Length: 224
Ligand code: IYR
Image (cartoon, rainbow, N blue to C red; front, side):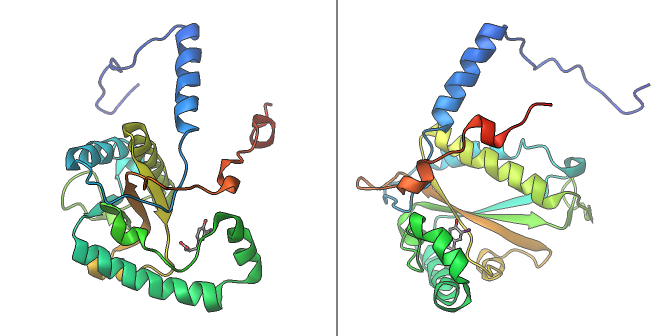
C-alpha cells in the first residue's frame, strides 16, 4: 500500500538496448572531454546558460528531498577581487606552512599554487553552500540529512551541465573558506562547500597531463 501521494512516472522514456548503448557511449565520450583548467578567458557568458545549469543541478536527489544547497553566483568584479584576496591569503598559509610534504607532492603534477588569478578572470564564481537546516519549502528550518552527499551530487550535476553546455570549470576549495559567508551574505547556518570557477577556457589554456589519467574499468569496479 502506497500511503503517500503519488504520480505515474510518465516522463521516463523507454529506450531499446541499442539506443541505450549508443547514448551511454555518446555521454561517456562527451564527459571524457571535460578537464579541469586553471586558465580562463574574460569572455562573457550568457547568464541564462548559468541559470539553466543551476536548475539542472537543483534536480539532484537529496536527503528527504530537502535540497540542502545554495548557489551564490558572483559576477561583480569587486566581489571577485575580494574572494581572490581572501582565498590567496588562506592559500599562502596552506602552501607555505600548513600543507604536509605528502600533500604538496600529490599536488605537484597538477601545478597548483597560491596564485589564483582565475578568481578574477573568469566571468562567474559559483559559490556553493550546504545548509544544515532547511526543507523543500521556503522558510523551512527542518533538519537536513546526508548533506555532503546531496550537495556533492548536485555539484557533480552542475559541473557536468556546464561542460555539456560548452563551458570550462575549476573546483576550488580554499581552506578554511568561512570568509565566503561574509562576502556572499550567507547565514552562519550555511557552510561553504566549494567555489566553482566557470567560463570559457583562455585561448592558451592548458591542462595538466596528470589529469588525463583516468583509472580503467577493472580498477574502479567489481562485479559480484
Ligand atoms: N586548496 C588548494 C590546494 C588544493 C588541494 C587539492 I586535494 C587539489 O586537488 C587542488 C588544490 C588550492 O586550491 O590550490
